[in-house]
Length: 134
Image 1 (cartoon, rainbow, N blue to C red):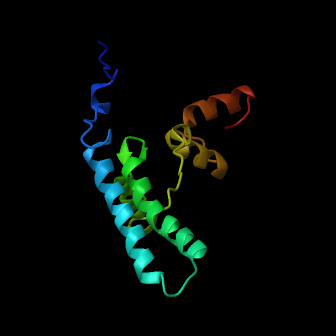
Image 2: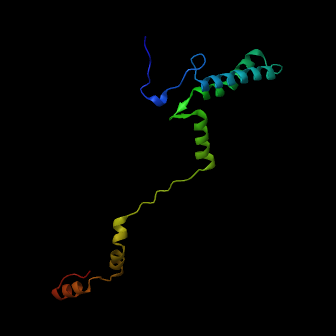
Image 3: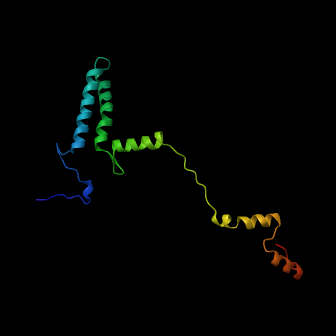
């Protein structure tokens, strides 16, 4: 007798009907219901081949939603997260770097550009000795 055990306990899903979890089974029933509904609603308007493709395409999103997981989210959680991030709360991220070195020496740099030397004593001693000014 062999019992399969998941390596990650959070990935465990209990099989309820036909080897499907309850969620997968409900979405499968929903997909079948949509396909049957589309068949009876659109039967007078389309031929059999076109109608079969419409039923398949109409039921596919519901069938996929029961089985797809993306980054640990179910399909409807992913769709809701995408709607929130792209439509409801879109934002532009701006990168404004901070130059800590420049901010620290800002006054010294400005004084140097104006020609004002912050070290007057050093300036006087250098000029007397023949050295350069600030």
